[in-house]
Image (tube, rainbow, N blue to C red; front, top):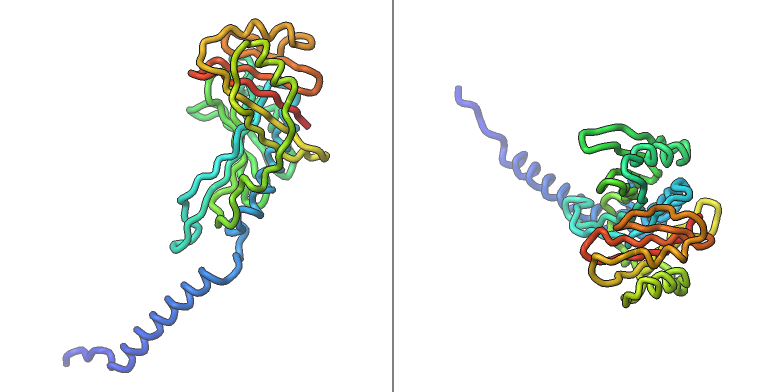
Amino acid sequence: MPIRGWPRWLLAATVLWAVLLGALTWWSVRHDPPTVREQRPLDQAGPVVDRALGQLVAATGDGAWEMGAPRLDRGCRVTPMDDGATLARDLDVVVADGGERALLEGIAGRLPADWRAGVRVTSDGPRLRADAGEFVAVEGRVVTAGRVRLTADSGCRPVDVDYVTLLPGYPAEPALDDAMRALGRPADTPGQVVAPCPGGGAARTAWVTAGPAPVSLAGLKPLAAGAAVIDTPEVYAYRRGAVVVLADAAGEQVRVSASTGC
């Protein structure tokens, strides 16, 4: 006996249910509030990333470091229907060649216990990994010999605000102006970034580009209060009170930064 097909009414009901389910899914995605933390929008994730960066600054100690400009990468997918963006903030630390692993291990040991920070050796060198909470990941890696980059990353988030509008402005940094005069180089308008410190206050980095490399950094030595933090032909870092000044002539352009820690 031939197998009979579905009754027409049952087939019509199935199609109608599928259309209704698809419409309800679309409405929920467009109008319902997020139900998981990784869907919290950027204005909620941004402060968590900022606080994580401040914790990293505090854990770095007295080394030569600078914060980089926030990176907002658009185009990731929060849902199949909605685009999002990833916010990342970097902290670069310069050490003597060979000291990268010890630096990462020292930082991991000074981070909050609930971050569960640890360092493992991979084929690409030592890597620090930690969980700053609220689905914000922290990673540390060696970018070049003697330079370590620590990154706090929000993961993909709905974009509800332009992140740069959340950053406060600060006045000029005198130590940066002194360094530029000592180098005898013209400077662009300074860029500035901040991050909240765990105990209150804020860490800050101001930086400028100072023309093409190479350049002699010897003119900076009279400005150092005590021994230099880093002293190589291409990188020179020193302290002026609470400020660490870092001059980097390793790339095509000379970059000079002045950072105040936690």
